[in-house]
Every structure is written in C-alpha cells, then in structure tokens.
Image 1 (cartoon, helix red, strand yellow):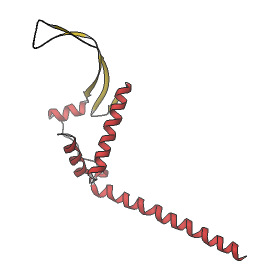
Image 2 (cartoon, rainbow, N blue to C red; image 1 turned 90 degrees about the vertical axis):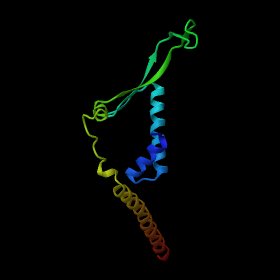
Image 3 (cartoon, rainbow, N blue to C red; image 1 turned 120 degrees about the horizontal axis):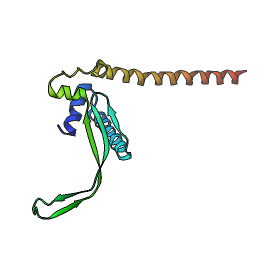
Image 4 (cartoon, helix red, strand yellow; image 1 turned 180 degrees about the vertical axis):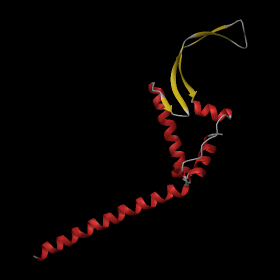
Length: 140
C-alpha cells in the first residue's frame, strides 16, 4: 500500500474527502518527522514507537571488490519498534478491532453542518439588537 492508497482507504472508511485525509496524513508525517529530527520519541500505544538512534562508524566491504575496505560514517537513523497489539494482529493471534462509531461517515458529517449553522444564527441575533438599541437612543 502506498500513500495514495492509504488516503483512499481512510477516506472511504471515514467518509471524509480525500483532500482532508491527504492533509491529515501529511500533517501526521510532518509532525512525526520533525519530532524524530529533534531526537524525540513518538509512541502510539498499541501500534508502536518511533525513535532516533545513533549508529556508530564502522568498516564495511565494497561488494564489487571484496578486497577493498570502506569506512562508513556514523549516522542518526530512524527506528520503529512495533507494539505488542500490532505484533499480535499481524501474526494472527488477535483480530483487529472495528473502527469506532465516531469515525463513521454519518457521525462525522452531521457535526460539521450543525457547527457551521450555529455561528451564523448567533451572529445575526447579536447584530439585530445592536441596531434596535441605537434607534431607541436616537428617538429620545
């Protein structure tokens, strides 16, 4: 599965647009990469841990000329350690849980519409009394 297939799968499962999912996946990867670059450890309980490790300098062998020795520089490398739950699911010892109901398409679409409608109505109510009070002051 590549990134585009992952975005399509998540969009289908959640009912969100592909653009929204692509932005979310991009933000996740960007944040994860930034944390690893700083040397932080990122732990996703049940999934695994991402961390940065220091690899020591060492001597290697040129595969095209085995008699030639190469010096490999020290480097910082990203490492992923799978969590026990992920290991059990991949090995077949456990079944993957279903997506939570809050993630379904009908639940995620309804709050967006309700949240968008409420601020508009509240803004109209606040603006109307201000105009009436100004008229009353002018009449007196």
